[in-house]
Amino acid sequence: MSADPDPRYVLHRITPSEWVINDLRFAPDDPRHVVACVYEMAPTEVEVVWLRDLPLAVRYGSPFEVLEQIERIQSTSRATRPIAIPHLPPLFAD
Image 1 (tube, rainbow, N blue to C red):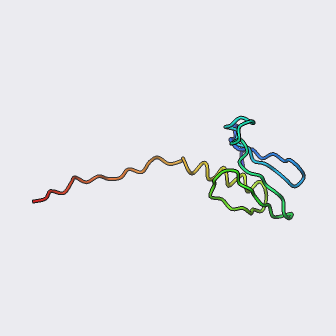
Image 2: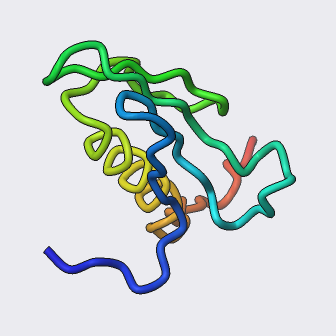
Image 3: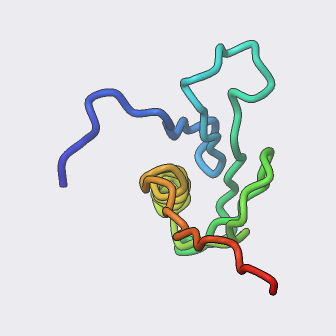
């Protein structure tokens, strides 16, 4: 697994059981900088408080899974070109 040399999202540990995920596109004083807060509920379970409207779950196995999901949803949402819709000539009424 190769690390992205210029990542958009980073995971920062705040306490032994709390993390935040930051979006580096925004300045640290911008409210959009913090994407999510992650709290450890058990050794193999974390709960996420989303600070953005993202269609993602609130429970994961680790904070790294949360980061992977954010990266995955952001990369796929803009990864494809628009789909061309074939146009037909108008129907002629007699």
